Image 1 (cartoon, rainbow, N blue to C red):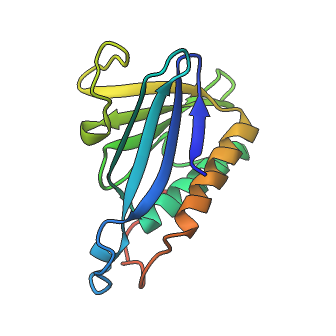
Image 2: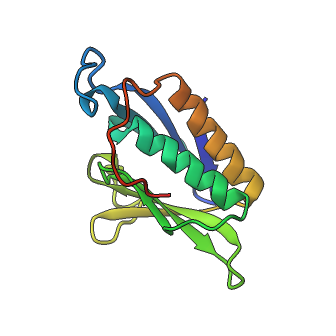
Length: 165
C-alpha cells in the first residue's frame, strides 16, 4: 500500500516499485537505487497520472523515514527540507509560528511532474503540493514509506558518507 497524502485538490501516492538495477549487487550505489512510483489524482474528477523513475538510494529513503518520524515526534531535525541524491522528489516541513509541524510540501521536478500545467501549476519548473500533516498523519505516511522500503532492503554495506538527519 503506497504512502498517501491528500489535500483539498489532490491525492498523492508514493511507493517503491523496485530496484533500478535489480541484478547489480556489486556496486553499492547501483545496487541500492530505488524506483519511485508516484501517482497524483484529482479528488474532484477522474484525472489520474502515474510515473515510475529512479528516486533515491535505499539508505536515503531510510533516513527520510527517520526524518519524518522525528518531525512527527516533535524532535529537532537539522534540515527543514529532505532531498535525495536524485532531487526530483523532496519534502519540506511546514511549521506554525510556535515551531510545531503542521504540514509537508512535496516538491516534484523533471520526470515526476504531471504533464498538465493547467491542473497542476508549477513555478520555476517545480510542482509544489502542500499537505496538512499533523503528527498522526505524518507518522502514518512515514510508516507506509518504510513498509514500501522493507520490500527492497539495502544491499551490501552503506558507503561511509555524511548522514543528513
